[in-house]
Image: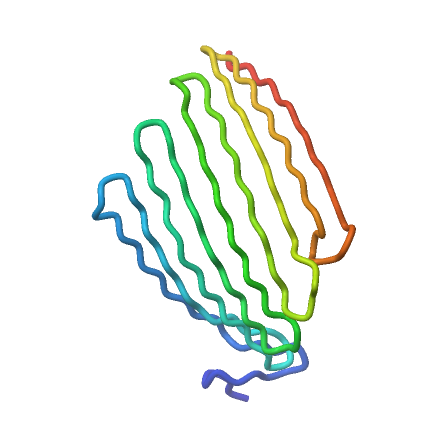
Length: 157
């Protein structure tokens, strides 16, 4: 039974996957990227994936944005995600960052929203890191929320 023509075989057979991406770094401090691909799924289904975005760094500040689209052959399964972030290296020892993303799913009236902030400080062999993340309508389900806060201290001898 040959299935190298993109077909599937067997009860759990899946199509193959393929992807291609490009990246442009010809502008000082900028990274511009885009990619597209197809991923096979069970039952002969297929998922098309597309993404594009950029990051730009000037001095101690880096900003970025990315948009991704997932098109699934199953009904009401397409997802569009948009994310933004900013990071600031205050000095060699201290950095702070913030990020947010939103996911819209076909067939859902509820958008998933995630936000997070983090800070890191290092002094010699000691590092202190903290982050706080929150999510609303996780998995595009109304009132499905989470919050996570963590502080970590590490020592290098």
